[in-house]
Image (cartoon, rainbow, N blue to C red; front, top):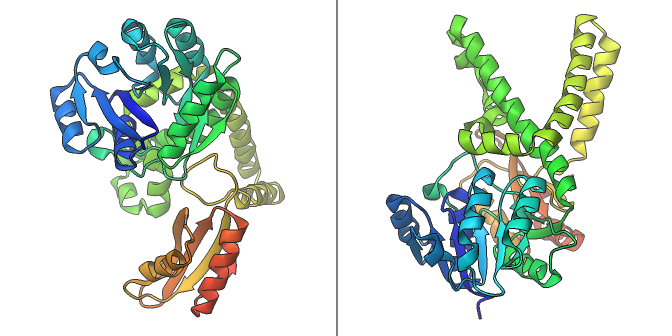
Length: 367
C-alpha cells in the first residue's frame, strides 16, 4: 500500500526528477504528477519514469495532491507558492528541497497559511550534473534529509514528510532553520566557493602557463568537482544564505591568513602544527559521500587486482543480509590490488561484516 496517494513535484530538474523516480520505483506514491514549463522537460520526465504525468499548468498539477514538493531554485519558491495556494486541496502539505531554509521557511509559512501546512526540507544529496536527464532514483539512499519545522508546523505534517524521506531511502534529521543554514554554509556552501576560487586561480595561471592544465591530477579534479554545478542555482543559494555564508567566510579567511603568515615567516613549527591539527580533525570525519549522517562504522579490506572482486565482497555481505551504505576505493595498484573502505550503519552490522569477510579469507581491519 503506497504511503501517499498523489504527490506533485513542482520543478523537474535533478532533485525533483530523482525524487519522482524514487517515489515511483519504491512504490511510495500511487501517482506522481510533475510541473514544468518546458515541453521537452515534461516529455523526458515521463519517458524516464520520473513522473506518471506532467503538465505546464500549476493549478492542474497541485489539484488533489496530498503532498506538494517545491523542487525549484529558492528564489522562485515564494512566487510559485503564492500562485498555487488557491488550488491546493484541504489538508495538503507543502514542502521544499531548498538548500537554504531560514528565509524560505519564513516566507512560505506566511504565504501558504492557512491553506496548507508547510514543512521546510533539504535532502543533503546532489550532483554537479543538472536537469532531469541526470536524475537518479538512488540519489537519496542513506543521505540525510533535513526537516526544519517551527512552532507553527503541525506535528502530523512533519511526520508525513519524514515518511517521504524514509520512503526514498533517506535519513530524516530535524534542525532549526537558522542552525541548518549555518551548518550548510560551512559544510556545503563554503566548499563550493573554495572550488570556484581554485578553478578561477588555475584559469588565471593557465593564461600565461598553459602547461598548468596538464598537471591537474585527481586531487585537483576531486577538490573542484562541485564547481561544475549549475551557476544560476548556486548564485541563488549564496545570496539566499549570504549572512551565514559571510560568517563562515570570515572564519575561513582567518585560517587562510594564519597559513599565509606561517609560510611567509618560514615558521616550520607553526605550519607543522596547523597541518597536524587539520589532519587530526579530518580523521574524525567519516569518509562518506553524503553529509550530516549519523556516525558510520568503517572497515578497510585489502583485495587482489582481479575481475569481480568488488562483486564478491558485496555477495558475501548480501548473503548475511548486511547492507553497505558507503564504499570507497582508497588505493589501487594495477596487478597488485588495493584497499577498499566499507561503511556500515551499525556496530552490529560492522561486526557481522568483519566476521564474514575474515571467514572468507579476506584481509579486513577496523578503521
